[in-house]
Image (cartoon, rainbow, N blue to C red):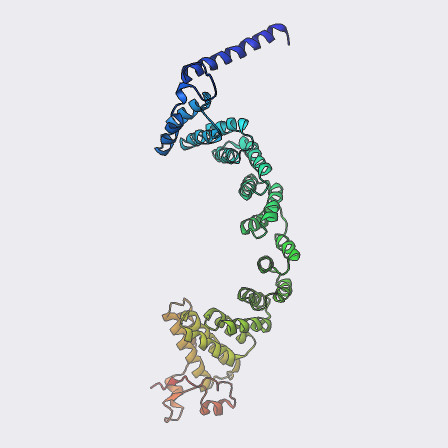
Length: 425
């Protein structure tokens, strides 16, 4: 650089310094004898706080500028910068807000509050479309973590920034840091799965690794089972569930999840094992009883299916599903044992099923009416003609009656003793 340029530079810097000095004398009121003793300093801090409480943001900015320019601050100077920057934020000027916080950080580089607010304002700039602020935003968060490595909030915001900008590899690294501090952080676990999916990786590996490291942790086990179910890997899910049950053999959530896995895997016998345990623990839960009844149907145990459906109805919790389930038991029972040419007692069972479908419809089950009509229109139920062929001494008929046992030559319907169909005339 030649001598002329050097002289011009020095001249320019001197001019800037003199301008700032003139401004300082004009605003602060004379030369400063000692720190904080300008005339303007007296009471200025109180004015600043009053303006903040009243929401006079422009006045806050003006007063904070004076306080900083005139060194009217003590140990609380960092807070002056915070109010100064936040006032700009209140006015919808996050760029000016960030500028103020950066000035404050030059004096207080390790202030967590200033770093936190700088990260906040820079994130608003990014949301407003200034993507160039991403590096600065991440810098503030990294500095926060240098000051306090356990700052979960900073890590979560860093993870969010990487996610928004589709930087999933970097996001996973940050999430791993979160999980080291808080291994049960559900949001972090969920975000990690999504990041894996975005990278085309199997998200269940996240849950598998966690569970393998701590196999007696129920929450980790349930999360892993859920991942396997989402991937429709029911065979492996069943094996893992059995392992988790070694530690938590009576946990209701685990028993329910295990039964659901076996149902999905078409293994109703195993599903029944765990649904029965659930019912034993909580026989006042209609959901468990209805599922158990369905599983009994699948292995042709209609007596148990029927009695379990009756228990669900007796609870009065979910009548539309409970009545519909009992109807399904009766229909499947009749389908299984009906003669090629329907005999009278087969029709009685179908008619009881139609009644239950109708009852379910009364409780707003959307399929109740359709299922009932299919039995009536298909001529599965008793008719006047069918009753004409029955001895007139029978004014009603129960599937569990001796008459039906004799007609069927089987006691297949004998457990339905307390219900009957009235004679049609």
